[in-house]
Image 1 (spheres, helix red, strand yellow):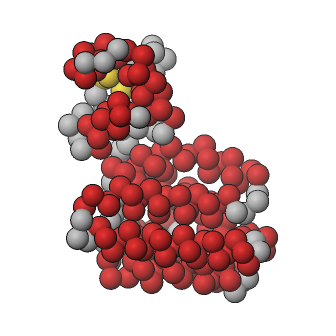
Image 2 (cartoon, rainbow, N blue to C red):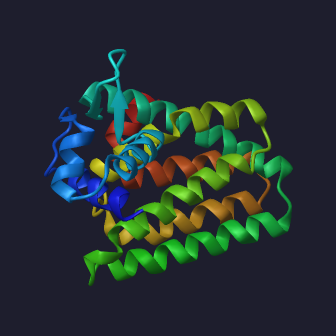
Length: 212
C-alpha cells in the first residue's frame, strides 16, 4: 500500500504527468524496493483507472482529453440521474437515511478541507463513494454494470480535474437536496436534485448544453 500511495501521489501531483511511460524496474530502483511490490501497485493503479496498459504491454499514466472528459461527464450524469429515479421506487427508508448520513459525513470533510488541505482526497473519496452507493442502491443490474465499467475513469478524472471550489457556498445545500428528494419518492424531483447538484459542481451552462 505504501508503494501504491507513493506512485499515486506522484501521479496526482503531476510529478509524473499524464501520458508518461512507467517502467517497473526504474520505479523499483528509485524507491529502492523489489519489482514485485511495484508490479502489485501498478496493477492496483490500473484497476483504479490511474494508468493504462497498451497492446504492447507498455504502461502509461492515463490521460483524458477535454472531449473525453466531456463524454464521460455526460454519461455519468445520465446514469446517476436514472439511478436516483429508480432509488425512489426501490429503496427503503433505512437506505435513504444511510445516504443522508453519508452526505453529512461528506459535508463535514468538505468543511475541514477549507482549513486543512490534507482532508482533500478523503473528501473526494467520500463524495465518489456516495455517488457509487446511490447507483448501486438502484438495484438495476444493468445500470450498475455500466456504471462500474466507467468507475475507474470517473475516479481518475475526479482526482485530476476536481471542480472543488466551484460554487462552494452552495455545496452543502446541493448535496443535502439529494436524499431529501429521494425521500419524497418522486422520480422527477430526484432527477431535478441530481441535476442541481451537477450544475453546482460544474457549471449550469455546461450541463444544460449536454442535458437540455
